[in-house]
Amino acid sequence: MVNHLSILGSTGSIGRQSLDAAAHLGIPVRAIAANSNTNLMEQQVRQFLPRLAAVYDEAAAKRLRLAVADTPTKVVCGMDGLIEAAAAPDTDCVVTAVSGSVGLRPTLAAIDCGKRIALANKETLVCAGALVMERVAQRGAEVIPVDSEHSAIFQSLGGRLRHPELKRILLTASGGPFRGMRREEVYDKTPAQAVAHPNWNMGAKISVDSATMMNKGLELIEAMHLFGVSPDRISVLIHPQSVVHSGVEFCDGSVVVQMAVPNMGLPIQYAMTYPDRAPSLCEPLDLFSSGDLRFERPELANIPCLALAITAAQRGGTAPCILSAANEAAVALFLAEKIPFGKICECVAETLESIHIIDAPSLGDILEADRAAREYVKGLV
Ligand code: NDP
Ligand code: MG
Image 1: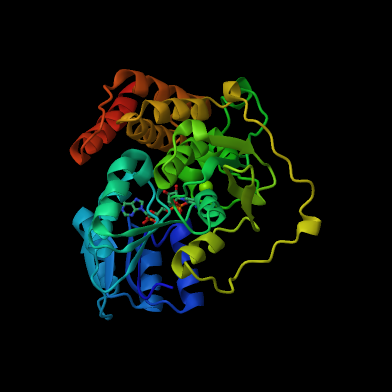
Image 2: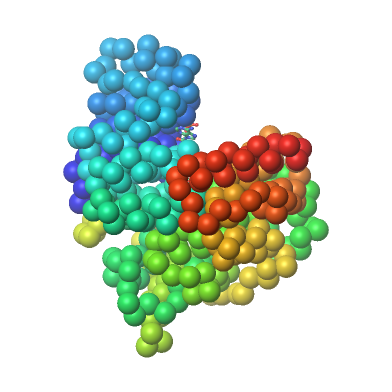
């Protein structure tokens, strides 16, 4: 079990559940970070008494500084503040739960300090997977996946990221709120319809990604890097019940999967207690009342975002970064009701076709591809 935590994205869905897990397990939280939700951050400061609170937005940081002036918590801001929270010398584990590629630089900073990364922020690995995993190996840091599928794969491999007898990864997907619908049927779906996920309660961006199934595409790329496999060794299975959270097939034909109720509290807690386990706040799984467990092949013609992500995964270089950044920008436009649901995928496809892809990118190339992709999507609307 880890000793002291830093939680980046503490006001979000994963961040709040991470604080609950920390309180439940009795692990002190030394640093928190978020973008601008200072009301909630103030409550968190008073409850958890972290040494450091990083607020990305400068004006919001000023607000928080005033609000918690009577506490010993130091308030910092901007990217430097996020990096300070990630690299805090008094923590041994950083939960990276900010949404979007803004998580990349703080994650690298934590890796450079050799910490355990409880990795929720999938955009980090999608954009810079090769670079991040190489840095993890160099610095003796540790990545424990928080994303439920990757935690399930990690657990199925016996708590390992690499396994010489691994043949294939079985990546399950609920199919989201529009499962089984045709492309034309979903084109004009609204943000409220898109964020209404049948099984999971998550932040807005990832909920939209679940509706387009871009989320599964991002997870496929995340899995490639975490477990060191090529995209053709990852099978996506639609599993509407969300009871099997993913698994693996070994070279002898044995299939091992992890099952539990759909509750992120479990993988979050496991990333903190690994290699041990501890009683959790989650309901136990009752297989007698889970109903029939079904597995279907995804129909890529009706899931264009997943198809695009697979193509970007095969292409490599900066293609996944361009895919992820364009998707982030397009989802923000969709949530602001500036483009229809079906346009998200069109924006991503056009951006991928237009921006030059660089092989074996440096961090600079990745940050530039990210910027260029966002800029390109803005220009499309
Ligand atoms: P939310 O939208 O609920 O929360 C996002 C968090 O990131 C908030 O704390 C937000 O702060 C913070 N944030 C956003 N931008 C910045 C910034 N520029 N600087 C600092 N903090 C920032 O997201 P989720 O919790 O749903 O997801 C977080 C990450 O975890 C994502 O990468 C997602 O893909 C991944 N994930 C989430 C799952 C889930 O069940 N929710 C499952 C698996 C993975 P503020 O509130 O101030 O805006
Ligand atoms: Mg997931």
